[in-house]
Every structure is written in structure tokens, then in C-alpha cells.
Image (cartoon, rainbow, N blue to C red; front, side, top):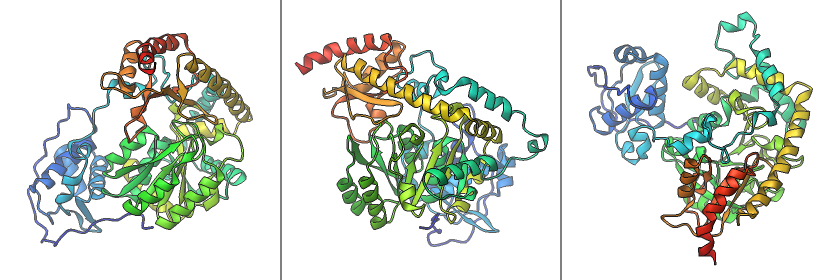
Length: 494
């Protein structure tokens, strides 16, 4: 269970001194400076412009030569170490470690970040005019606008002495203590020092991947599963392997067979109210999954961000395991607002120092203002009532959504147990000129934002389906569009 593996240089050559002019960085093009520096240096190393054993310039030297910050260089070098292209020697610096691994990396790693199209960017922006039927956020009034605005105003009154530094590396202490207390009361014993605050759940996933994997490692995911996670795993050069999930949970026989072949390093699991299906694992399935993780020696990352929207008594991998090989990820985005961007990692004490190191290396600390706002909101007397009201609204919205979709011939892919989403579609095989993505593109032109099946799947879909947000899915505009889309499909069904 080592936290990080770094390859040593092959047949170490004497360190070579090279002249370091500024590299060519296309600053006007899309993408971050870190991505561009990684792409340029990857090309130089894989093209053997830099020999194995070549000493890289110091962080300060590289930053000064190229007109970038030292933080940018540190993150770029760390990413190249994770890719196996550089090695770090304490007190000596960074050296070129190998060439050939670059040829095995996905194009997104070698050539820079993939382009984000209009459909996927609108899913996260929250500023588009389109009806957000496929989005992952709820209307502000569902969360309780007054509670959130009051919390933000309270957080802005931060003491002046807290403006001098970056904040605690683990995150705002009072919020960490609150998270640990809630976990102890409801699921399993936890200490504040076992809680690391993050910029939401996706940031947590990124830190875990950076800490526990290296390029070429196999990572298991649910199929279908969280769309952004699939892209993140590939970005780290890992091999994402899908484990089928459906109405009755995970296909554990398929998981066992693939674990024997692939030797996974870790697996991401949505135990409760899975995105996009809305189903939960049974206690028996959770126990069997833990047994398989033990048998094949891989970590389980429990994506637990929807638990507050579920009933009591649902399975918890972290509670069953006691954080031995389970890492729990939480978030406040689903019960407060995604704009606050506060999530958490709860892990064993032995793993926490490396997670903190990676967090500091890649972005220093998280926003204490946001964390103070969340703390003020979740510790207020109105919060529990707000969550109960939200769950009731979701329950009613989910039933209305299933009924409205049935009126246009759509059936749920799986019957959800709760939460924000219903995934449903037509039992019609997709065709090149008529599939979920082509229908979603047409919907966007009509002012409707849909999430097509391909966003969530590693395997090709055998039917046409979408993930619907129950807060928006019974709008008459959507109904009219789906009726028009269903008309040609109904002829294929008859």
C-alpha cells in the first residue's frame, strides 16, 4: 500500500549539463501554463532531445528563464514525475528518467488537454440560457437561498489576522472537526486530523489519483459512472476499466474476473444514490466488494457525496472497513450549492501526510472563506430542516419526472432509490444518424441541455438514454422536444 511509486532512471547515465534557453510556450492557445509546459517537455523527452540522466534546471531557474511562477514549475515537474519522465533526487534536483513511457500515454497527456465542447462546458457553467435538464445542480431556491447567502456574508467577516496566510493545509479546523463529529455520530469513528478539505469532490479524486497511481496503472470505475472522473483518470495516464452497474448494483462476478486479469490499483464507487442511475449498493454487495478489494489488494474510493439525500441505514464501505483500505470522499455541493466548492477526503492517518503533501504541491491550501461559509451553514439550526425539505422536493420531482418521461415512451434505465437524477430512454438501438449524442446536440440548438448516455459509459450503449435532473425534467418545453424526437424512433419500435 505504498502511497507513491517513482521509477528510477534506466541504466543511469552521468548527469548532463545543458544550456536552457526559454522553451516555446503557445501562451495564446487554450489550456493552462502547467499543461503547456508538461506537453512541451514531454515532447522534448520522448523525442530524445533530452537524454536520460539530463539534469533539469532548478525550479527558480526555469521560472525566471520562462517568465512563469515557481508554483507553475513545481506543478509541471511533479506531473512529469508522476508520468515517469522525470525523477526527483532529494537535495539534487530533477533528472530525465526515461523516454519510452511517453509513447504509451494517451494523446491528451502528450498533446495537452482535450477540447471541451459546448455541450460539456454548459453542463458545469451554470450560466447558459438553456433549460438545464442534464445538469448536476438544483435551482437556488431548492437549496435555501437565505441560508447560503447568510453563510457567505458571515464568512466574509473573517478576522483580519486570518488574511495574512494561506490557511491550514488540511483546511479550516472548525469544519474538519464538524465533519469528523458527524461521521463519528452517523457512520464510523473519525478524527479531525483524518479529514482533508478540498475544492469539491473532483479535486479530491485528483489528489487521490496523484497520490496512489502512476501512468499505466489500472483503475476500476462503475459503468455507467461519473463522466468527469473517466476523463480525469485518462488524464493521469491510467487505464480506466469499467465494471457494469445496473438496477441491482455492481456485477461483482465481472469485477472479480477483471481484477484477476488487470490487477487494479484502486476503484471508485458511488455506494449511495449512484450518479447517473440513482441506485444504492445493498449491504451484502458492499461486504462482497470489500472482500474482493482485500483479495486482490486494491483501494476503494467511496464517492459518498449523495448520502445526505438518502435514507438512514444505507451501506457504507468506510464504516464497514474502518478506513483500512477505503478512502471516503464527501462534498457539500448537493445540499448547499456547487458554487462554494468544498469537499473532503477522510482517510487513514498513514495516508493523510502524503495527501496533504500533494495538495500543497499542486495548489497550496483551499479557500478558508468558502470553508467558513459552509461551516456557518451546516452548523446552523436551519440546515437539517433545509435538507429534509430538499429531500421531499426531490422525491416529488422524481415521481413527476418518471411519469412525464413515460408519456413520451421513455423508461428508467434503473429505478432510482432517491436523489437528483433519473436516467431514462427508449429501448431502441442507436444508429449513426440517430443516437443520444445527436439528439442532445439537437436539444441544445432548441435551448435544452441534455446529458447523453455516452457521457457516462465506457462501453457502447445498446439503447438511447439520457440523465435527467428531476428539478427541471417536467418542463413543457422538454416534453415537446422529446415528443418530436420520439416520433421517428417510434416507427423503429413498431
